[in-house]
Amino acid sequence: VHALSLLQMMGDELKLEPNTVVYNSAISACDKGKQWASALQLAGDMRKKDLEVDVVTVSALASACAQGQQWQRSVDLLVSMPELKLVPNAMTYSAAISACSNDAAWPVALALLTSMRQ
Image (cartoon, rainbow, N blue to C red; front, side, top):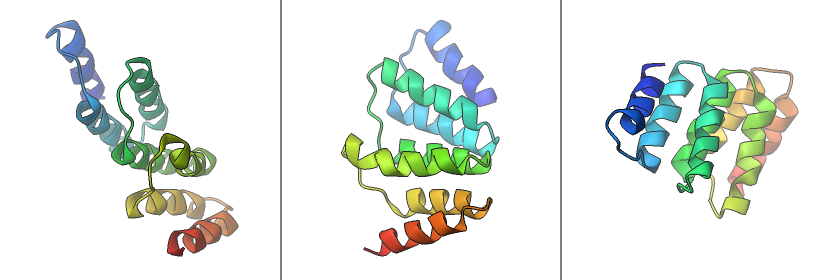
């Protein structure tokens, strides 16, 4: 929650434009605070501002969704990466697999593990 306040203060009071790194940090803070919906909102804000979404962004989003037991969203983020011309890394796969293990989606987790090895 503090990270979101700081992000807003950057634009409102300090008249600074947050970049991808700043947004990634705020999304990671949302992950740690189990605020998956806020993390997705921040990603939407990034797109509106035409900021680059990178592997760190998607990995943090996938992890935030995993924390919020949103395994479908986490997997969807992983699957969408090629459209963004991004290559998933171990953190992205780990977040999606972890999200699936927290639900009855273990077959999806197994499929992700198999695709990760390829």
